[in-house]
Amino acid sequence: MRKPGALAFGKVYCFGPTFRAEKSKTRRHLTEFWMVEPEVAYIDLDGDMKLAEEFVSYIVGRVLERRSPELKTLERDTTRLERAPRRRIRVSATTKRSSGSRKKAPR
Image (cartoon, rainbow, N blue to C red; front, side, top):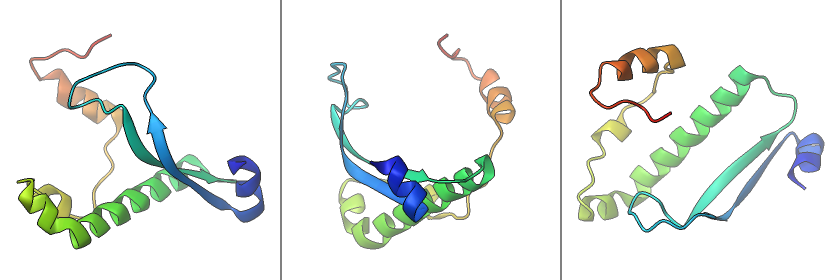
């Protein structure tokens, strides 16, 4: 239903719970989480990246604005989140940056 909606309205967002198929009991792998999926008609890669950047920046800003007491209670350091705007990093730059680390990426 999202694709026809995107063609009709331009931008459509789907917000709801998502469930992981594989079993995992670690703190880093939630079995359920909430996700927002935008569906946009007639957009190029740069436009898609711009939309994603603006979307994430807006959500982070609202969380910091409305939920900072809870983040402080959880002893979360939000200083890196408070900086804006963020810059894009090319895949080649991240590869160079991570190649100097001791850990090798899984293949």
